[in-house]
Length: 482
Image 1 (tube, rainbow, N blue to C red):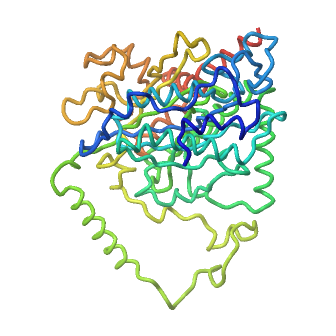
Image 2: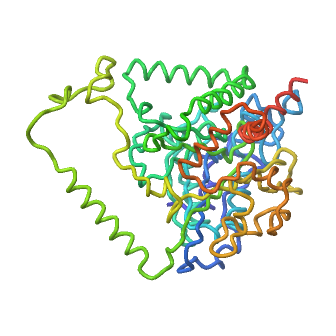
Image 3: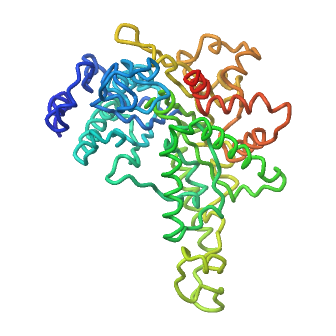
């Protein structure tokens, strides 16, 4: 692999003359990074980082127009002019100054504070400039550069990075299926970065029915149409997504009538690229109670093996006897006429347990997350850099100071008002309006019911949820219309 410092020297020849820009900063290793020893045998921290959708753009130019994807021409309106660290609430990708700044910040503040990194891709720019079309070579080159940088910041220090290809990391863009919802006892949730909108939703078994080819094509066209119309109806689309979620949440069954086996949680995290919102990343905390005790992991493995053997004895393979209707031959469940047959009926998760970490707070259960953002990205410049700040956290205020065990978030990475155990209602409302005890399926359903019930007591949390979804973009759109 070409060293990263050399890689960005050859990018102009690979990508064309437009790559060369006086404001671009190569993705280089900080000078003092080699003096930092890899973290080894330091024990678990009980935290991991979710990083998504960086979309580095080597063609980005400062003071260029949003209408050109920030690649050329000065705009007529000042609010459509690209800044040194990017264009907030716009339709441009990340300048290398922003991706560098973000990774440098993570290296300094979080590389020693997390156990692993989930990196959900989209490490190439969008193909949104007809005068400068994206090529396969550019996609691969940008991905290699980002892999090298992630290695320098994390894996070289002994921190595993779990990567996932984004839809813009391949040629042509594509998506993935929802098959993982069937393994609720081992897959504790799903993390996405697509759409760049901060929200969550649920998959139920009926949602896993496969579409036939015509339905799939129709759904893709519908998505494409709505995406292409975003610039003309962005405010309307904001309302549509928020209102659709609230409507879905309002239709959830009451707690006493809810079968938790039937649900899996999808978390959509906002992105690093300020398109169309603000640069963001998340740090999750998870339960590590008892893991440091001698033999704890071995005991857990033995317990899992016993449970597996016990289950296999209870459900022996049946070779003869009555066959369920529709199972005599292979059935194509994509076809509408087969949807209601026995073979194609949605089944509950094949592996679900009330004792699983996704259902009850135990070892490995996700406890909550803190979301950091860069609200001043549009005002910052080379001399006055932006600052990552805590936007909000899902925890209860009291859980920030556990008294014993691992802190969910290092105190030094919290605002001053949250660094002491002294609680105030104002701090809780500003940074921690959800007050969740953990991120089990039951906790997510509880929050969803609060958001779905249009009662006076829920008005504030509903408004805050919407604010977090769009990070002030609705107010920014109103300002642009003035």
